[in-house]
Length: 291
Image 1 (cartoon, rainbow, N blue to C red):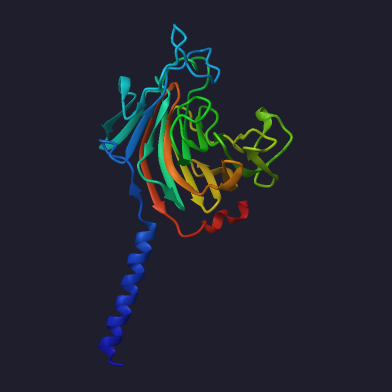
Image 2 (image 1 turned 180 degrees about the vertical axis):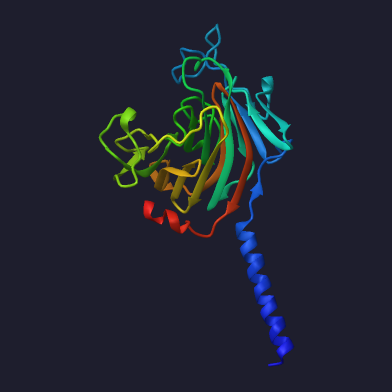
């Protein structure tokens, strides 16, 4: 083979490899000043006596939720700080922003910190929000009538990375003590694999393994999802791992491996920035031992 042709062929191969690797490693921003990649939903300003039932007005008539893409009281806003767009969620009304696009097999990362304002019905509770993933269907199917069916990566003071199921979902999580009550139901990578969620013996709440939150400052949270598995990370530390992700449709449990991403408005002021996502082709090798 002609030497020049050989060199050209090698160069093309190397270039293709470089382009392929770059594409796989490329982070895509989900944030801009117009929230152009997000929709929004608002439900209710819940009262202290809320019990999951349909809210009623003074005459006893059902109150309808505010609905989609009606930014009442400017609950969701974006301001630039140090050249970076920052999403503020006031928390005054329950609801969420959610991505227009669904995602599968990805690594998601963002920075989050709480503000100072709190609202009824959580004036005396820790400040709360959440990252909901594998979200599908309509908003308002949960207890608070505010979110899509999904899994929750909790973002709460003293509870970064906890797991909650939202509506009829479930997953397997390794637990320190599968028989513990919710206050002591902790994730443990060396624990006993336990099914959490719909049609299970446990309701679907597991606390993180350890507290890695930096109170009052920006915290980096990451979510890695591949196939039926997902991993919650807080400031670089694994705090939760799920496998066997499912949701219930009719009387059947079906795999839940993709969906939209929601960020909750839940009675507390919270800020999010540098929301980025990238596609992955496999579960990173350093996390395989978690399962």
